[in-house]
Image 1 (tube, rainbow, N blue to C red):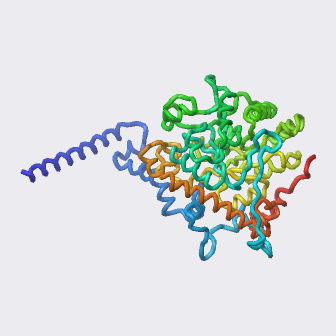
Image 2: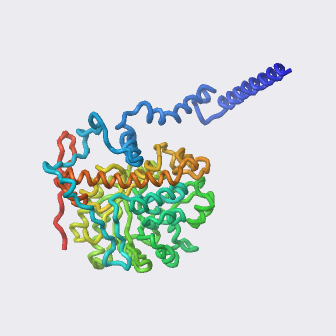
Image 3: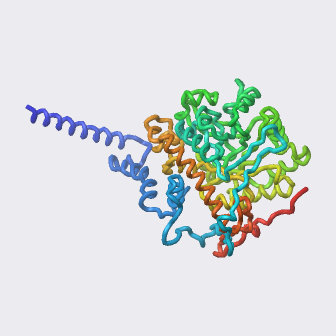
Length: 491
């Protein structure tokens, strides 16, 4: 009897399998959307299966350590080691392509600074003398804007706790302030996006009452008006409906399950003067520093902004500028904008720094750089080029365990960082990842200091353009201060 039952079950399974194949065959030959399936039923599905798997095979088996995009394996492995406190030591020489165009080479000093001669990198105060509650930035490296919604609840919690332990700030992104940002008691920069999420009234306009409520949080240290971001200049934030949970909808003030699409600019900010009006208003209401985040498309923005500040007086200036390179972006973006819109941070940062120097605003306006600055060499370059601080999003995502699955927008992130699927979020253990966030930040700061000491400097804030050389197409390197000469300082 058991044998007969097993035989019957086997026949039923085989019949079901054959029936499924027949159904799929008929479906393939009758459908009109896919020529491959219509001409090659059944086996044509292998083409789509291999296409989906192709990026993973390339990542793990076929591409070299320095070949992958947007971040190669060598870079990701370095971040993982820093986050795990495993050290940045390698053997048998570097795989960094030092002769390639754009390669960074730092000018080592013949007599580097001894350990006992090294100095602690001084903090930089933002908004001193121009707002009621200035903000002291202590860490060179900080957590860039990533909204709750774009990233998960456990990811925000881990970043908040890790940032507090490391002494760096965390930018909320445009998705509003969640309880999870506050959980670690880290310093927070609240970002005001074009949709005013988290700080809007019933009509979607900026709410002074909400501004006061946010400013009442001691750990909310500053406010940032986002004009644009490197991933998608000219387009607002994109959070697809499958990631808009009830909690996220409540924090943002939008409908659950619907795409969260921010306007492509602030409706109440159409020029430099209106931008400065809004900066002054928020600073007066909150008493805290107010800055501007933007990608850069050329010289026009800085020309118009500095001209408006000259007309109105130095007190009207934003307390900081966050410059995002066109290579930046950790969330969903149209490929046409992600690939082709805005200057890279390599071009944008010196341009903005020069504009501030020439207009006499360099000490008034603090400068923050972001855009694929995930290694100490890139951070040291940014400091030399003119930045006071560096923000990184994807660097901290790697510290959380990101494997660059490129599924940030799809709610299927296998590491739990950018998904709201509880089953996938379970893999992100907050306390463990918070420790890695803190370790990555501390080790980044430490290795930037190491570069500075090797250049003969007492601390990293002494880095200048003459300390960095950029390899040219000829294979020869040129000092950054030759490529981007310092302008004459304005009065």
